[in-house]
Amino acid sequence: MTAPQTLEEASALAGRIETQLNQVLIGQPAVTRQVMIALITGGHVLIEGVPGLGKTLLARSLARVLALSFQRIQFTPDLMPSDVTGHSIYNAREERFKVQRGPAFTNLLLADEINRAPAKTQAALLEVMQERQITIEGESFALDAPFVVLATQNPLDQEGTYPLPEAELDRFLFKIVIGYPDQQHESRMVSMVLDGTLPDSLEAASLSPVTDAAGILALTRAAGQVLLDEAILDYLLRLVRATRDHPALVQGASPRASIALARSAKTQALLSGRDFVIPDDVKTVAAPVLRHRLRLGVDADIEGQTVESVLVHLLEQVEAPRQ
Image (cartoon, rainbow, N blue to C red; front, side, top):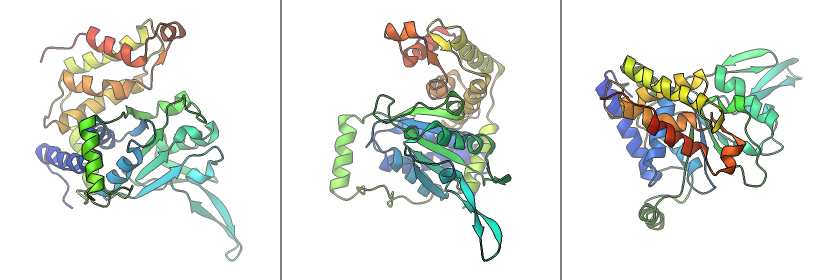
């Protein structure tokens, strides 16, 4: 497969990938767009939603469309860190220890229901997500690029869930909240399953590869060439800094969030067919970049405020530059 050479080719390739994904994840174009932005930006994604909304289908479809290696881990309360990264076993015949690589050695790792595992197992992903390498018995192994973790979690009020550590949450570029499709799209989905157009499984067998790892890395390079004007940079920094002073929040966004917001806005501009960032690009990616990095105060929670409502307020209050 030929990697894109220009920004126009890169934007067109990304559009073809989105089109394929939207064929199976019916009625969720914002979700597929956000996953695409994260993948091209090189960041990990936390997807929250109740069971049955297509989170696993989305991950499998993405791997198939991009011809990437794919592994899935079902997180459970008894899952051990070595079940994620791998372990060393003794080979009696060869009289030496041999590394048995775990499922994290892949391009696309689906960590399904990550918040059903205890903190020590969740922590096993920290080095993998941040350093793109795995250490087993003191030996480090670099992971092939691209490497992206797509983690799904159930809402925290469900039984048997653990809150993710803040350090781990900060490793996710995006937190995507996936909701129910509207009636029109749900009707279309049911009809497609009943007539066999859409398989009632998680195999995504109807999709065809559009590009490969080299194509994704080319898209990442293309996004890096998108122009981020000083005025837009100043705007997104003011937006991030405003989270640190908001009275409803006891924890604002870190400098890592500023970097994530800038990179994501550039990718959003690329997917929109532009070689420069506009304020709407920043606004589009602000919620998935920031929502999991902010912590609401107790008083604000009692008053009925949410992180989402605070973000809406900040986007309205922080003045954007004129286009």
